[in-house]
Length: 52
Image (cartoon, rainbow, N blue to C red; front, top):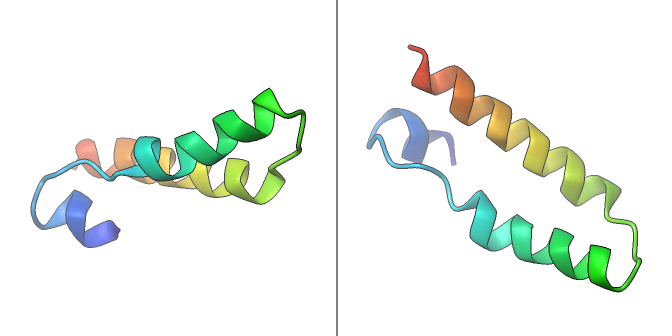
């Protein structure tokens, strides 16, 4: 994951992978706290890497 941000300059696939799980959780009123945390951390990593 980190290598796709830093070495190759490509964005991660967090939207397609975790975004779908989080969306399904919202639609079915199922909490996804671990997925939410991982999603937030990956998005923060993307923003941090883009600034360097």
